[in-house]
Amino acid sequence: MEMKNDFSKGSIVRNIIGMAIPMIMAQLVNVLYNIVDRIYISMIPDIGFTALTGLGVCLPAISLIAAFANLFGMGGAPLCSIERGRSNIREAEMIMGNAFVMLVASGIVLTVSFIALRKPMLYLFGASDATYPYAESYLFIYLLGTVFVMISLGMNPFINAQGFGRVGMLTVLIGAVLNIILDPVFIFALDMGVRGAALATVISQGVSAFWVLRFLTGKKALFTLKKHSFILEGARVRRILGLGTSGCVMQVTNSLIQFLYNSTLQLFGGDLYVGIMTVINSVREVVSMPIFGLTNGAQPVIGFNYGAGKPDRVKSSIKFITFVSLGYSLVIWLLIQGFPAFFIRIFDDDPAVLQAGIPSVRLFFMGFLFMALQFSGQTIFQALAKSRYAVFFSIFRKVVLVIPLVILLPRIGLGTAGAFLSEPISELIGGTACFTTMMLTVWRKELKKQERLAVAER
Image (cartoon, rainbow, N blue to C red; front, side, top):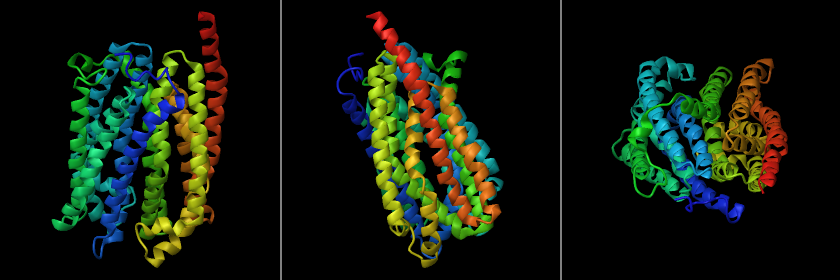
């Protein structure tokens, strides 16, 4: 068993790329199906942009569901990688089982709570009387599949933690391809509109969840879901929650920020700017996808080598993901600043949308290069189970920086431009602080300490 997917051997770059490419492909298709979903909605005759804006109002609620999936999935999977590096397969199995139970339980609670509160919640998130019917129609059906979403998003990292990047890729591919096929059928052929888009998503996530569970209970997995691992143990749960809080906080704060953006833009610019924010979020999903795939692919490799006592390989991993992330981000920054209209026209070519959207897109992505530092630093903290640092920098950039800026800048005379400008300011300060702290704590202290221990053991 331990000879399979042994990341302590061979080229570190090859190991990361071997894990990252399937994840990038999966992320690509996943983003494409989200984008296609929104493109189809924007194509609904007469109501397209209004319906798209309604979907944008739902994004904070959808982010909250993803936050809880990350809490248990991204909290447990890196711990499994570390335990696998230590050859402690039984503990890895127990961690996965505990995470699964918490995923399902929280999914049920979220379903009941959000359905009961959906009307006031959507108006709080920036819905208007014009966009609420579309937002409510989409969200109600989407919430019925919350448990499927939780299992698909939350348990797939445990497949990747075992080194089965291609299987993890298939989890996303199956759901994404099915969604792309079902969308036009439900939206247009059956004339279900936004309800059809939501139903297609629920069915697709259900199939993905079935795929994940079938693999994790099958013979090919290195460690599997078993009934005895479902018994929650306090210390183990605290480890999962402690590490998963970082990813959860990132998603919760994303949801909070989306709410603040929508409500602020509704106040200063109306439905037009809420719709533009939906377009910007869609563009960000596309351009951030390769970095997410790379950093997610690196996590199992970094965690395994850290658990196996290989600090030199951990350092090589840090160098690789940092340089690649920075290079890619620079290229994307140049493209967005040079051709913003191209990205907007993917969703809408209305002159009013383009006139307001072009300067907004340029402002929002002005500091995108510095997000590479945030991604790299957060990934390394997460992979090495440094939960306090991971949580702190999740909160620092979003809560300490973005939220006050979104509230204050529009109200000091900058209007909608102030809301969009808050993102690059936070990326510059937050990304630099996160990466610098990682270098000082992990590179200079933690890994050097591990190097000294390795020398002493020899």
